[in-house]
Length: 631
Image (cartoon, rainbow, N blue to C red; front, top):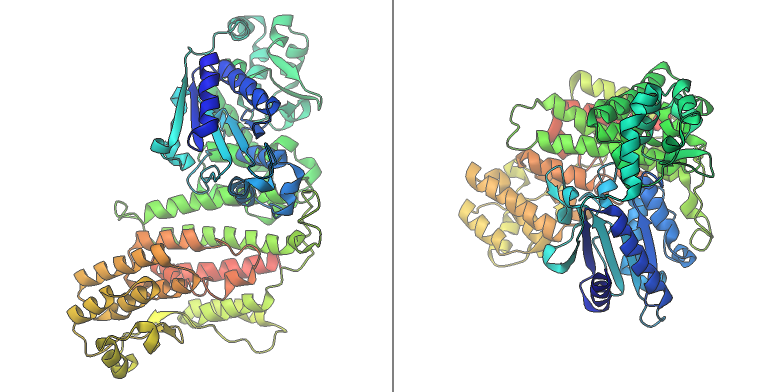
């Protein structure tokens, strides 16, 4: 162990920013890292943040871990951080700290601050994290050092290696292997012996331990009964059981039960079928209560509110089932709870991510049999999640408080009476969507638009990007100047009135050659403008060029060019763009989600490409529904 401690010291002094510690013995691993962290603090070599990942501590679920992680930064972090209102904002705050170490550390000196982060026990992460969507440990800048520890068998999840999930490069990560077999300490051995005997002592006692082996955080006696479904006989059996049955369990100060440590807990969760059965029962209770309309917050067990979404994610329930957590009923249940905004947005993100994964899969070349209406349903679920989150953030208003950057971090309750402030933009979005529809679909959306426009005066549709397909839109003079070598931006080659202007009198080969000579957004415009004139094979290649230029140089303005290319875009690319951009950084400007650069109206060509008319109507319905729910 001394040799490994020395290796860790050497890594901290001059190694890469990230390191992975792997051991089959979690007790030895945690003891080593804790001992080393204490020595770092004593030597004042770095500011240390130690984050244990453990259901026994209530930090196995991503939301709980992030709140602890954020809370461990010293108070000056509030001088540079916003008030996180969702798991994503918590991650962004942590990433900001890892990129700006002097804001969170003054050790060993103000001139050269050092920060050491230890995340211990990734194999115990309960709800799919870390994941590639937000690799919050993936950007360590000067002065930041990160260690993550795990067991050998947990290096992959859903086919993704741990390095990929952490966004770490194996070549730039130090690896420390701690020798040792699976934990065989006397405590775990005694626990396993108790397991073998407990069934003979009292069958109901087995159910008590099975329940504790399934829950994702310490749990109260009342929640064991009402949320987990344990009957009173199980509690009585534990209370009156032998001393050996009490040894593995801790009753914490807040009157919540948990296993004493994770290796002991692992001894009771070997039977995956039992865990599955208990989790399914927890989900069943939550869904049944929502179906009944049981929305009185006090009537809901605390554990069921906090962890229903996590259990649903672990059991990979359908997108439609997860969408029950993006509902007025579920929001009402969360509203008056501490941390209710972060809790609700966590569940909304679970639904959104599941819908995004399903949509991307449905649009892959391998899934040619997926019907358009199925894609439309998934797309509308994503839009609804984004709109709900944006409206709630607009209602939160904590970022408008004068002292939010200097005061302590407080999870304020959700004020649903605060206006979201997007009435006109909502009306404009609905009017715009109605303008691109026909027949009965148009009449339906027009009715929603009329309701939204009431009292707002005259409301006009917003322009939608497109590439002209008629020769009257071509500009001979522009083509002449392009041929002479003028850059696209020099001849108004960007979007004019949301129209990508086509060159004319150019052969496909000549137009292609000119487009290839451009860079950045000018290259996007050049290729987009010639799409209608190209043969199919060249058109597919041109779309790939536009996509490559966007991912390399694109911004919100470039999204308009990309949206104009939607009719020719492969489904997989359209899904990737929409999932990546929808609500990406609009959370402080909810009206911008509806109209404006990169808004739903400007992305509507992508919506039509992915789900046809049904998707456009579904998006309009989501805008109208969320507007009535969260005005």
